[in-house]
Image (cartoon, rainbow, N blue to C red):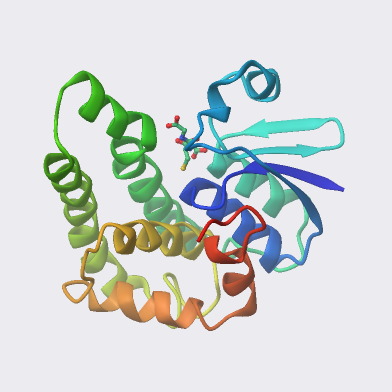
Length: 212
Ligand SMILES: N[C@@H](CCC(=O)N[C@@H](CS)C(=O)NCC(=O)O)C(=O)O
């Protein structure tokens, strides 16, 4: 059985849960409570020395980094492929994946926000402004790109890894009360995804460690 170390509200964990759900793979969840700092404790560092979630164990195979895990699952479990067959479309998917994974998420994750508040003395208002700024900058460009690539989903009419990145990032934006009306294509794609059972089951609120 696949083992997933994650946290209900972690968008990087959400990405991996989406791939698992879309492919219909059974997996056991090992919640790591990020709010209580469990990711930094010795017990978890023995699993993932980087002290981040998600982390996947598949028998002898152990993998960190959500994008690496998603690609591993897609290549190892080919049912319900999440990369398009045409090279150009695969490049578009990777472009979207990287815009979110490289240009938004690292600026906004928990340890960066904690550093802003605790080390640099920024208050909640500045922290939230920082958070929304980096989403807005990339979503503005992403909206333009998606207008040229999207069908029902981000790239064409099949769900791809791009959607598995986009929906968790929109979840983060909503958590910080961002309105998405400036990004109508993003809004439309996410609404389409959210009708699928896999997206409902992978959502943070559906997880066993979800807190009210
Ligand atoms: N690039 C990594 C980022 C992983 C990451 O930052 N995960 C967050 C949760 S979304 C985390 O574990 N944060 C813990 C912390 O910042 O202390 C990935 O894609 O897996």
